[in-house]
Image 1 (cartoon, rainbow, N blue to C red):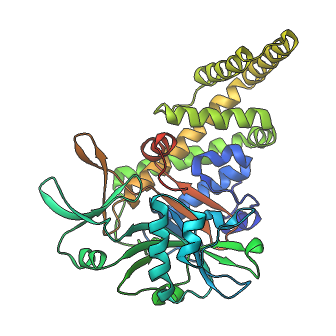
Image 2 (image 1 turned 60 degrees about the vertical axis):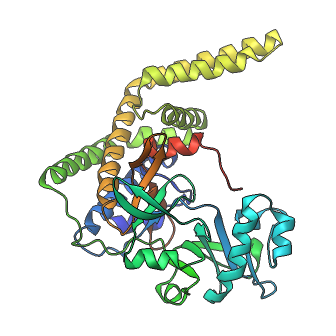
Image 3 (image 1 turned 90 degrees about the vertical axis):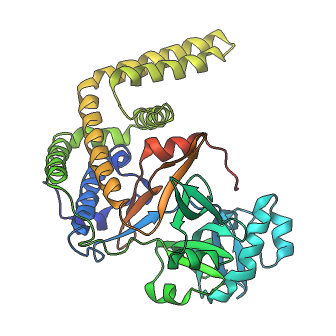
Length: 402
């Protein structure tokens, strides 16, 4: 029997942010239950405020990630990227530090952060996604309508020109969205929690910094599911719950079988890169054979070659022996992914921005990069991402920030 939402979440131990549909591989039956209950909480959010059960936030496509605030070890304000957590930390208190620790376009971005973010009066340490600095906002005409736009990474964010929000953004020198708070007495002992407290967020605004938190605002009553969507969701949720219960033993076995689980995780990523999420036994076995044969072809010693061939046979035999259970698991994975996509498409209709991706022929409409759902205790977090739209792009796109 599926446990109540809050009960199960307090027991979850996995803190890795994974795709909602993938947690059946990482966390077994517990992952399936959490995925289903997170989906239920998001569905409920369209009719009532569920902030006491879950925190929902938007995955903004900003770059770079900026971590800043007061270093508890010396009381000084700093800015940096995720490299502040390196074994040899890159923590910037001055522009000279920025130029010493970083290079390329990242230097001017972090220097702008040093110029303007101290005025926000940040007391602790927070992390956000940088959306723009001076010069990044431009006027762009899309389908006959004029927007102000900025493209920090893959998504072009657009707001119709002349609106109050457009004027706010155009007048700012830095734009950033906050999503994480850190607490601790030293930089190497910080613990993170999702979100920024509303009280802190209300103070983190100046005319030079357009600042917001990544939390989804209360969606209750703003958008509703159609009768067809409701029927589809109910059918998929029933299937997911039934399949999860039936597969409980196998999901737990798979969670603890490192070899099978790792191959499946890598296989899913390869499918996304190829533009598909249709998991099936034929393509899984073909992937395993191709991967192992590629490794075999690089070997020189005959004994090593034969040993690797035997390993390939064992892996193929193992997968074949669990063929029926794997097919059922892939069916469960598909149902969870379909639930996720209905939720993403609905959540994309909430907000003040329009979203585009630049193509060779202009711009095409897209959605937010995705959404993150976390239990209020911060013990479990999952992401809802349109993988064919964004994960595949992220796998193949060159990165401007390090």
